[in-house]
Length: 120
Image 1 (cartoon, helix red, strand yellow):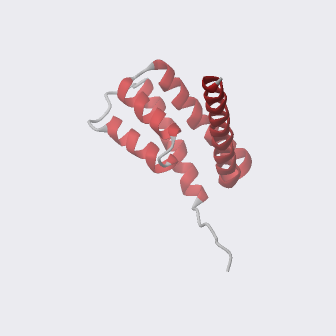
Image 2: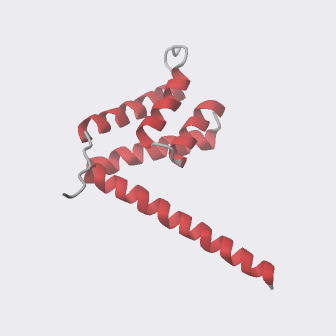
């Protein structure tokens, strides 16, 4: 039997869009936000993105209010939503994993070059 991955795509996308809306509301609140809103936002980003660097960026942005992190977090979430709208969740997941993979390979290659230089 082949492995099948079950994913409630519609619910996942809804949660992602809710995260975008809440992240923007947190960024420019029109009303006072309830206690625990920031913790909830950080927790939900891990629920949606897992233990990944995008989730770390969002959680850090919320904790530190660092402008660059906030911009990166918002960009990542909204890119994800539009990518999923275009290609479905699996297309997006594949791109995420593939993009990470290429980034890691580049970092490893850079580190190897550094190490080579140290030996000569």
